[in-house]
Image (cartoon, rainbow, N blue to C red; front, side, top):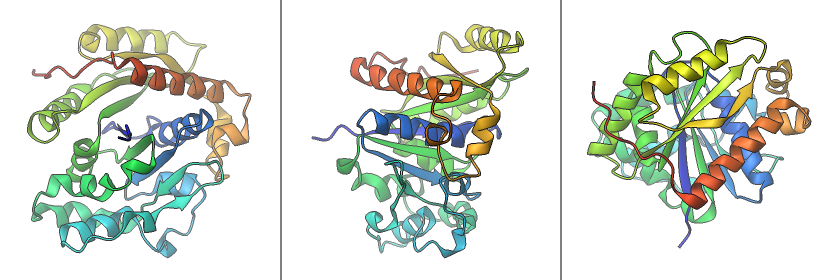
Length: 275
């Protein structure tokens, strides 16, 4: 039996490094010999762009097509939507068509499980499927959480970083209760950390005080770097663009944490988060 782990990278706040984390973690795991599929679950299609597919209107099939056919009960073979990136990770892309999906899901049968159905036949081919969620907690993100074994929450090292966390944790808790009893919080990843300031230390402290008893906070922290922003316009991951950078090093270390956590499976389980 293939033990594919599905990870949703989620935070309803934008600009926290979700897309960079999805791509970089995927490439880092693939460098460790893992087979990885990434799914762009954001109508903005940032992950698709970042990986070098710029003409998104010309993509033959996207996650939107797969889910649309799923809810109209004429499923497509999901394999036909897969694009292969030169850094040895696969992608199911997205584009703006996906922005109408929230509306289409409203009246669909088993609307929360459409994405899960789309990817179920792909799990046997991969060790990891990583879903880049959109910055909202609407129906598409609920679909991603209903498909996932774990959710990773990137949080930017800044004041009030913990502010929106309660809302996200309640959503995860609700999905776990009603839709996906296996869902766990993999942990919180601090991103865009500027080592020259005390802010990241204070943010980490704030997260630990507020949520440390409920969620794991990863040891790895992702530093801020100009190179990361540059690599996003090249269709390359940070590993291809600047493999000796601190960011590449940090994502390699993060991938090891994920893989070790998987081996041990001692990761923090989601306790129901009630205010």
